[in-house]
Image (tube, rainbow, N blue to C red; front, side, top):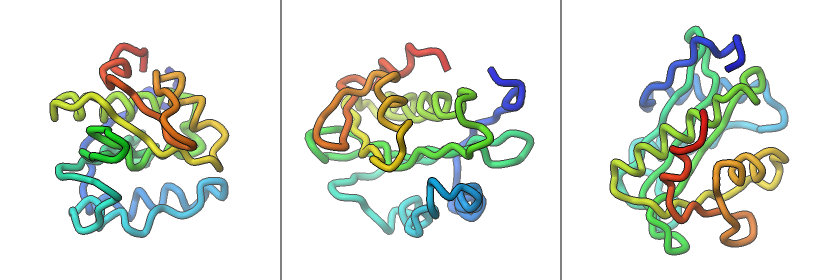
Amino acid sequence: MNPSVRDLRIRRATVADVPAMAESRSGDPDAGPADSRMAAYLEGRHDPQQALAPRVAYLATVSEKVAGYVAGHLSRRYGCEGEVQYLYVAPDYRRAGVAGALLQQLAEWFVAQGVARICVDVNAESPGAAPFYAYHGAQRLRPHWLLWPDITSVLARPK
């Protein structure tokens, strides 16, 4: 792992973390601002299409600085059982294993919920998103949507 992320910590995120999560994107012109509905999503007051409870978010930090975050929920969208809602890694921490570690943490949560068929809406503006998800076993489902028929395949990949 990249020495800059040697002290990577991942923990469950709360609504109190949303300002820091949003701030982590503020210096990234390619990513744009964080979803303004993120706090409402985490509190269960904003539901993406066919979303079900529960939902979860995880925050990755390095020396108390936000390196990235991931969130997901149970879902019925496109015949899936769960959906990755957010996955973001700050530029200084990209290609250092942070996204893979976050995705594995979320995959563990999905498995604990007893679901396996997970989808993700891939940001077409992010050139690395689709290759990242494909590397982690996601397959094409629809235009800009990918699917893991069995999310446990993510757990078998190195972080």
